[in-house]
Picture: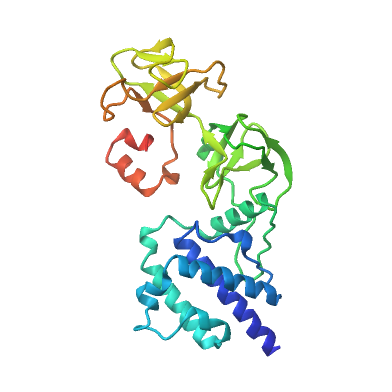
Length: 315
C-alpha cells in the first residue's frame, strides 16, 4: 500500500506542475500528450518527458525561485526524490505562480479543464480526469435576461462538431460546415446555440485558431457618403454607398468589413473600408456598435468602458 501511495504522489506531482505552468503559459502545454491515467508507470514517464521539455523551453531554471543559489531542488532529480522534496518543490512553484499571475491572462481552473477536455476530444483524444482533480462537465446556464443573441459564421476549413452539452466528452449531435451561419451566445470558449440545441467550441485553445467568427454591427460615422465595394480594395468596382447614421452588419477582415444582412446572410460580395480612402488611420468611417456583455470583457476593455469611451467596442 505504501508503494502505491508513493507512486501516486509521483504522478500527481508531475500533473500539478503542468497545471501551474499552464496557468501562466496556456499555449505551451499540449494536453493531448499528457496521460492522466495515474495507475500506469508509462503515463508517469511520458508526463515527466513533457514537463522537462516545457521547463527548458520557458527557461524555468533562470526564474529566481529555481536558481541554484536559492534552492538545491532540481526538476531532473524529482523522480527519485522523496515526498518532502516534492512538496518543497510545489511550494516554489506556488511562489513562482503568485509572482506572475497578475500579468497573465485570466485563469479560471474549472473552465480551463473543460476547455482542455473539449480541445483534446476534437483531436480524437478523450481526457478522463482522475478523482483528485476537481472538474465539472457543465457550467451553470445563464439566466435568460443575461443572454446576448449574436450571429456567427464557421470559418474553419472543415466541419466542426455540435455537441449535446457544454463538455468535450458529450455526444455529437450535428455539425456545421464552412460559411454556415447560426445564432448563439458566447460563454467563455463555448457558444450556446439559441435557435437549435447544441454547443460549439469556438477555437482551438493551443493555437488560438478561430473555428467561428462573430458578426459585428457598425454605424457609419463619416459625414461623407461611404462607398460599398465589390471586393476589399479601393480599386474595385463601386456598387453602392452608405450615409451617416446607417447601420450595417458584417464580418471584419483586416481594415475591411464583409457585409451581410442582420441574420448573417452574405449574398453577393460587398465590402466597406473601416477607414477613409487615402486618409489617416486615426479616423474611422465605421464605428463598431455591437452590444457586449460587460462581465465578459477583458479588464482593459472594462477600464476604457468605465472612462466613457466607445472604443472598447472596436478593440
